[in-house]
Image 1 (cartoon, rainbow, N blue to C red):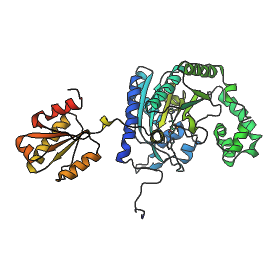
Image 2 (spheres, rainbow, N blue to C red):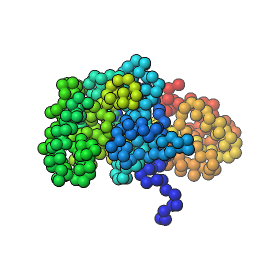
Image 3 (cartoon, rainbow, N blue to C red):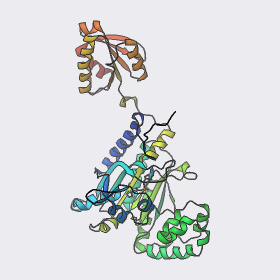
Length: 428
Ligand code: HAM
């Protein structure tokens, strides 16, 4: 087939009607679970000042250096399409003085984010995240609880074998010393590193630790590890996180090379994978951690925060792979077929009665042939079809057809909504 003249931009996708159910399912699951834990929803603009991200995420990160979509407005503002939610939510927290609200303040959101990455499997330029942030609580119990919430979300979405990779990357007390140790070690093995890592060595040496190149991994395997160089406070915090995870019986791996691609983290960092994807693909479903310095860095009060974001498209890929089914009740269960002008007129009113009664109904008012309408009803996999012909319209009755058995029964038109509620076991 010839390519159409216009196509969606590279790495960006339409979400077609048949894919919407996955997004809806994920958003509903996230909202239900996080509401139980006391999270409140927030929405922030898709565009923010570009400087918010360069300052927040870090100038030398791949996200800021290579992947931000930026634009200059006619008024001279320099804006960026958000590459993630965290910096924008922190900006909103400061701007609206949310530190005066009872803490911890738990916020969540979801929507599209944008990163100009090289498109490949599981990596898109417009993708969707759900994001959770807990402000104003420095205790390790929050880190563990956030991991538990992620785990619950994935369990509800039918992911069985997920594994949490966790590490601590220290804070401003202990990380500078560790960085020095690491740089000294890496410098002495510079020749054995890939070109990317030789550059990283100058700009963000910690990122050498999670390079996927085999030759770099060989060097890294003998590098000093940050967990051996944490200060007392970070060490205690990390120990507590692991103890809480043990108490919750959550499966985790300690990954001393996990450093994450954003600069704002302090102490705990973690990523969640499907266990069997770890070896070959190493594509995280969710990633997050603690960032106790960011609120202050962006102009607010000293506020500890911990959060996470999940990649919606990646989770959907996992749901598709395990053919997660959606209950029939979420789609309409009744089809309305009509023949003749009077029946069509009655049907319009009947359709409204069903809408008010919140019973999902499909119609095909544009079609006149009963055969075509019944064919459509069959395809829509409804449980019942209501048939309103000339005779029924005159007698103010309607036929109920059970699509599984083919049995039919005639009911008075003014009784049909109540009758269908009974049949579909919908409470009044
Ligand atoms: P992140 O690890 O950059 O963290 O992204 C979180 C998740 O978004 C990843 O685990 C992945 O599932 C998904 N993701 C990332 N890039 C892509 C892509 N190009 N295509 C498809 N999916 C992708 C953050 O964004 C942090 N803001 C998380 C956080 C919140 N930390 C604290 N609070």
